Length: 261
Image (tube, rainbow, N blue to C red; front, side):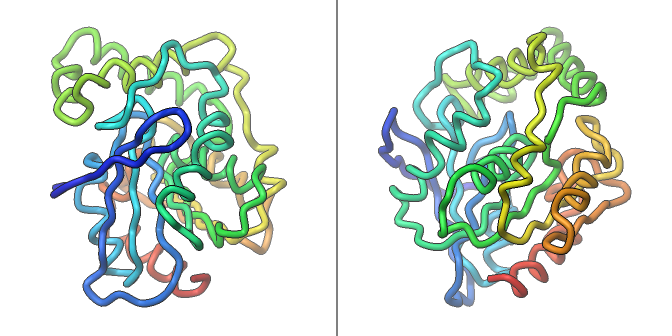
């Protein structure tokens, strides 16, 4: 459970952030966490602290505009919202946090944002990527999962459950993500070209039982980035590998970081 967070001023507003310190700190890059389409700092739960302790590196997490305790965003979000986050905000967050060297650790939308950033922004601070359940194109399974989430939003107490974490941002958080993916133009959304610009090692992790994407979403990493990546497919694992199979994921990231940090 998150103990405390603070607010970081960047161009466009303020974002919530938190640092997680390892028990036995060692020099090395900061692990910067980029959350999923419904996430925020607090919804990483125990993972950031566990990651810090396993790698002996500092972990930094922030909530994007429209999430958690960050400033709200405008709705509707455009189909380019992940590109916008990568190219307009992520660098400013790293600047504001004083991060000089980092490994980007993204989950779902956050993994896509990390890939876009590394593939299209020249930033020598980024030393490697960890992509958990990334999206590189819109699949029919993706849309099925997003439609199911919308039904839960409309017919259950999901809104009130999410309000606990997002407060007044709850509509920004859910509708900004969900409605965007359900727009007709998103059916052709594809960011595989971002892979061609990535020049750092990549660890891609995918659950075999992911409701939002198939194994293709990480197999494309092996195809487009031969020799500079590791792809891990995990059985009995859904869309949140760091929660569904936390020990396996921590082991994989620990080994990856020890090689490239």
